[in-house]
Structures are given as structure tokens and as C-alpha cells.
Length: 486
Ligand SMILES: Cc1cc2nc3c(=O)[nH]c(=O)nc-3n(C[C@H](O)[C@H](O)[C@H](O)COP(=O)(O)OP(=O)(O)OC[C@H]3O[C@@H](n4cnc5c(N)ncnc54)[C@H](O)[C@@H]3O)c2cc1C
Image (tube, rainbow, N blue to C red; front, side):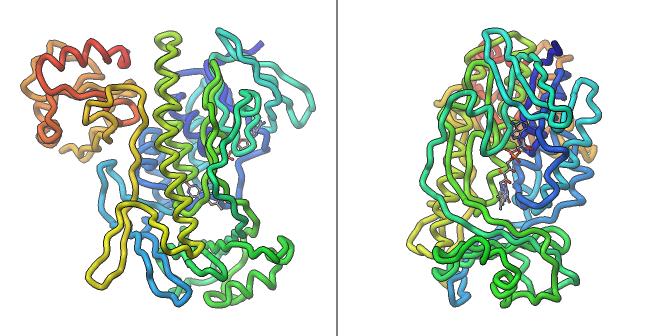
């Protein structure tokens, strides 16, 4: 029987990101996907700065950046085309070291994730392989899959299994956990078009049409790609809505048939749900397998990539340092609170687009002197897990600092995480990848001072795990948490 450190079920964006992050730790990884190749048509079209930083860690940004555009933000307009809410995404580099928001074409990302995986000798990708059974044991997991080409069943064994197998996850079913419906269920049509020629009268921003007659969304995607989504009226059949006549009639205010070709038209039921358990023994779920949200904020895939970023280094640490129950339990507790805030905010946004204008999408809404309201992006915290909740720096994003040589501190970041010491802490350990002295890095020193810390421990996913205010606390920090860095 073939044996692996980790088996990943499903090679969508969550599985592809997780596989890359795990492969960086030199683990043997089997990825099973039932499809022949990646899904070639558009789905996700937006991601944010935090996600771009994960792509940077994997090492795909240089090539992938060419396939993205910076997103300028979203406007919500009413049925009279009056702006009722603005959500600008200023072209300003954030603490994560990237712009707040990007547009992309999902197949471009999936190609880059797969291409990068080819660099790792210990990664095996098996397409046409449908997982049918997962058996959890104390020291390993057995996975049975069906080869769709030759109809034979295969059995493999691995230390851990992660189901990144989407909304109808077989892994979740095998874990016998349920999805809790959080309350938003609505049928929408999604139409992706490619413009034949540049069309300058189409908006550069995303527009949410809060029109009670037909709530709709327009997305300015990469190149000549544009998307319209609209809620399906109760008395309209799916067949009618997807007919050419219906679609071109709907598009009349913006486009004629001669302006664009339809790349894809489909109907989705937008849902909001979260799985009760994200882990059973050595089996985990991540991405759409663990949570679903409507696409109004463009955060569904992003949430799956955050899952991968949270889980990968913990699994790698457990394989390096043997099984550790507590560390792996922090995956769901840290991630579920964060994703729930995205789901709930997205649901409120959905209701706002459904023209329930009294809905307050976030607490962070201000009015300018013309009375136009604007909102800011949310950045939900990690739930409780590693570190002390009383530590005010715990869970903060460690900024990506620029260095003098045109590189950033992230370029030198240890994949195990790092302790960063202020200049007045004397440490004998001079040659250790995981310990950095801020002595010659003035911006980092200033940052430590601003957050009132003599030392911080930054996790591999760039969140601060712990901070120390005094020399004595520095000793405690090393004693309590440095095993993470082993
Ligand atoms: C219209 C629309 C717009 C969206 N826009 C955005 C956006 O702008 N930004 C954003 O962040 N998100 C967006 N999303 C959400 C995003 O597309 C999903 O969250 C994301 O694709 C989920 O990724 P995943 O890797 O978890 O699952 P998936 O992409 O669904 O991948 C699951 C994989 O598992 C495989 N699989 C399933 N079962 C098995 C099995 N038994 N054995 C082997 N393999 C299996 C499948 O073949 C597939 O490759 C949007 C979604 C929709 C529908």
C-alpha cells in the first residue's frame, strides 16, 4: 500500500494552496481529484491583500500578478441609479504589503498553483480519482478512491487527510458532521461575457444594483471579461432565465448582442452555511467543504485560502514534532469565528442588494458632507486558539516590511515562524533562521516600540502569536511558545 504524509481530496483553489504550503515543508503529498483537469470556466473573480500574501509565500505572485488587475471598489446604487453606499478600495499598499483588492480569472490561478506543485518531487497529483471512503484510525487514515478511467479501486494510507472537496464534500460526509444553514438562500443567474471591443462606458467599479424589481451585480473583471449576476424572479423558470432572449433583454441597458460573447451562463443557489466540525481525528475539511457564503463580497475562495494558510504549518509541525492534539484543535477555533464574520457580513450585503436599504452592512459606515455613505472592508480577528487572548497583539497581522535591498522581510521569513527581538534584548543565539534581531531594521524596531513589545513571535501565516513587554516576558515567550519553531 502506498503511504503519504498527507492526502488532499480536491484540487480547487483551497486544495491547491494547501498542497503548495505543505510541500514547502518537504512532506509527501497525494492529491486526488475526480475531474480530468481544473475547472476551465470563471467562478471567483476577486481576492484581497491577505490572500495575495499567501500566494507570495507559495511563490506564484511574480507570474500571477500579470493576470490580475487592481480592483477600485464597489458602489451600491438604487433603482434610480443613485449611489446609496460606496465601498472604495483605495490604491494604497496595506500592512500585508499588497493592494486591498484584486480581480482575476479563477482558471489562471488554478493553473499557477498546479504549475508550482510540479516543482515538488514528493507531490503526486492523481486526476480522474474519486474518493469514496475515508477510514480514520489512531495513527493513520486509509483512503479508498475510484479511478474513473479504469474503474478500479485503490487504497492508500496517510498520516492526515484534508478534504478540500467543495460544497458536496465526501470528506465532510465521512466525518458525519452537518452543515448549519445560516439563513441566506437565493437563486441567482450568473452570466460571464467577453467584450469583442473595448467598451469605455461600462463602469470600472463593481456595481451592486439594489433594485427591488431585480437585484443585480456588475463586475469589471480582467481584460475584456465582464460579469452580470441577477436574482431570479419567483415566477421565472431556470430555462427561461438562461435563454439568449432573456439574457440579452436583461443586458440591454449596457450591452447589445454585437458587443460581446457569452462565455458562461448558469444558475447558482447562493447559500450561507458552516460545518459543525472541521476535524475528526486525523481528518479535516477546508474551503467550501467547511463553509459557504454568497459571493457579494468575493470572499468564499479567500476564506478557503485562509483555512489552508492556518492549517498547513500546524500539520507540518505535528508531522515534524509528532502528533499534538491541542495544536490541531486550534484550526477550527481560530478559523470559524473569522469566516462566520465574513459570512454574516456577506449575508447583510445580500439583503442590502435585495433592496432592504435599512440593513446596516457593517458598523464602519460613515457619511460625507454630501450625505453619501461609505463603508470600509472588514478584517475579522482569529478566534481563540493559540496564544493568550489577553495579549493585545495576539492575532494582529505582522506587517510586511520593506528592506533596503528591494526585498521584504517576508522574503527571508522562516517557514516555521519567527521570534523578532527588539535591539535592547541580548540573545546569544546568533545563527538561527527563526530568530531575528530588529537592531539594524529601523522600521521593525519602531513597530515593536509602537506595539509596546520587546519581542514578538510571528506564526508562519504572519499573525502574531505572542508578544512580550518586559525582559522577563521575553523569557516566558521563549519557554512557552518556541517549540512551535522547532
Ligand atoms: C458565482 C460565484 C462567484 C464567486 N466569486 C468569488 C469571488 O469573487 N471571490 C471569492 O473569494 N470567492 C468567490 N466565489 C466562491 C469560490 O468560487 C469558491 O469558494 C471556491 O471555488 C471554493 O474552492 P474550494 O477549493 O474549496 O472548492 P472547489 O473549487 O469546489 O474544488 C473542489 C474540488 O474537489 C474535487 N472533488 C469533489 N469531490 C471529490 C471526490 N469525492 N473525490 C475527489 N475529488 C473531489 C472537485 O473536482 C474540485 O476540483 C464565487 C462563487 C460563485 C459560485
